[in-house]
Length: 132
Image (cartoon, rainbow, N blue to C red; front, side):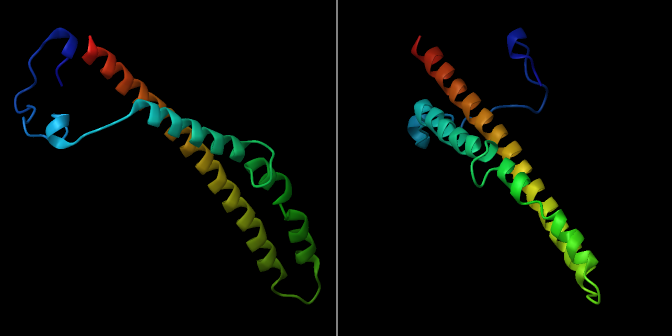
C-alpha cells in the first residue's frame, strides 16, 4: 500500500471508488458524535470496573467463592457412590470454565473500551482537521 506521507501513487489495481458508502456524509447519511463514543467508553469502563473489583459478581468474587474443589474432594470420598468422581470432575470443570469465560470477558471488554476511545479520538481529530 502507498505511504500517504510520501505522496506515492497507490499500487496498480488500488483505487478509491467515488461512490463508496460513507465517503460523502451528507449524501450517505453518515453521522457520528465523538462525545457519545467517549460516554459509551466511560459506561463500559464502569462495567469493567465492576467485573474486576471485589464486589459480588466480579471475577475476584467468583475466584474466592466459586471454587468448590473442597466439595469435589468430599464427593470423591463418598463410599458406594460411583457418580462421586464424575460429579466432582463436573464441579471442578464448571468452575474452571466459568472463570476462564469471565477472564475472556474482562480481556475483550478492556480491548473494546480502548478501541472506542481510540475511535472517538480519531473522529475528534478529523473534526479539528476539517474545521481548520
